[in-house]
Image (cartoon, rainbow, N blue to C red; front, side):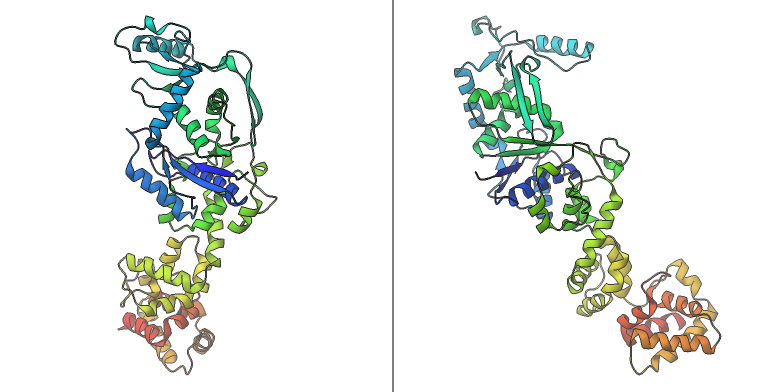
Amino acid sequence: MTVVTRFAPSPTGILHIGGARTALFNWLYARGREGRFLLRVEDTDRARSTREATRAILDGLSWLELGWDGEPVFQSSRSERHREIADTLLRTGHAYRCYCTPEELAAMRAQATAEKRAMWYDGRWRDRDPADAPAGIAPTVRIRTPVTGDTIIADSVQGTVNVANQEVDDFVILRADGTPTYMLSVVVDDHDMEVTHVIRGDDHFTNAFRQCQIYDLLGWTRPAFAHIPLIHGADGKKLSKRHGALGVDHYREAGYLPAALRNYLLRLGWARGDEEVIRTEDAIRWFDLDGVGQSAARFDLKRLDHLNSVYLRDIDDADLATELSARLSAEGLPGDPEHVVRLTRAMPDLKVRARTLNELATIARFYVLPRPLALDSKAERQLDPAAQALLRDVSEILAAADAWSSDGLETRVREYASRTDTKLGKVAQPLRAALTGATTSPPIFSVMDVLGRAETLGRIGDVID
């Protein structure tokens, strides 16, 4: 049997972090078994579904490198097939037409609200003759659910769960306007797409019992189910924007790496011993549903930051410098091939200080800023007249250096500090202010080495002239 999984988002908004994790679990399960991972866009809610949301979902999956097999299936294009199956259920007596008036349905809802329970259809048209239907009422089509026995689901995460059939009312599969409902559409689509494993959030678990009844009434083989606990915030409450859980596009724009985000999402509810950093090739080999916990995972942005910093350090310095140069150019800084060379040389000192690409761009930008540098207020305070006089002396010493290397430059500056009975920090801080425009940076002698003789002396000259 070929394993087939699917990710089926509704295009009514962004690809949020929970949806991305569901897609990842489906992708890993299929890839680890040489199966197929399909994408279905459940766009039957025409009022809320938008092209922009669809594009955001596809772009988010592509950025996460969760490639799907074949073309995306759009549920709205399959309405005729859904109605065909509804007609089949009508013909076999497993469904019937319901002619309830809006007033009758409103009364049922009001009663449910008064009794503090979910809406329950009382089955009043289950066995009535359609000839008794009131004039002007377009019927819905409802499933004739079994009234005896149990529906049993052996869920790979939740375990085996029984629900008495009498607890499931006769739910609608075709609306009065002829449009199919989610309950019908998802079953028909999963069957026709030959989905073998439905892996989704446990907010769909109650839906599974209704969907299984449709499978059973049609004589179709059910897929295996795995309902994953939802993600909560660090405080244990339902995940929201205040916990830092935003759409995948936010993490992309904030400078997180797709491999790091995949690793983080994998560890949200799935574990393999104490492994924390799990590369994608290992995740594909190791992922299985028995590693998914039954408790809600806790979203922790600090863990994501840590993982991203690990992955950031793994990137080749030249590749990272090229990415960084493009980001800085997009911010309006002048592009120059020499900047890539400079950033590549600086990268070992830079990337150990950053958690995201955005942080890296912030701390690296002084390397490519045009002269004269704009100084922040702290840097300006470092460059008082005494510091400028000191920098004149240091500039002459540096200009006389035979070789330009961090070790050689440090030796010369230390000799100067010792000869003039000046603490090294009193020399290094004005140098840092002049060369970076700030009071924090990578080691200043490494900065001078990377900038080179001409740029270093030019930046010092800018602040003492």
